[in-house]
Image (cartoon, rainbow, N blue to C red; front, side, top):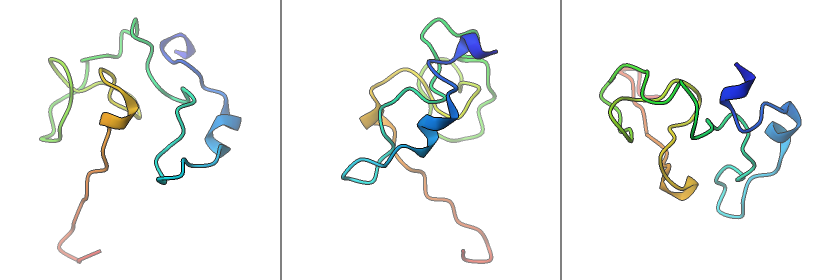
Length: 78
């Protein structure tokens, strides 16, 4: 529910990226520390913080600078 997130304000999704092209630190779709969605996901082999992955767009449990892009590849090469 909306109570699990710092903000669900869609206007924040339009905020400009930081100078290093990372996402802005505006709380959009970030889980609150009290969210019941933390550690409720299934381990799919990607990095996560805590006992299990979080449900949601972002993994909680660290500063935003700790979030890093994961490069995905396919057999098609794109």
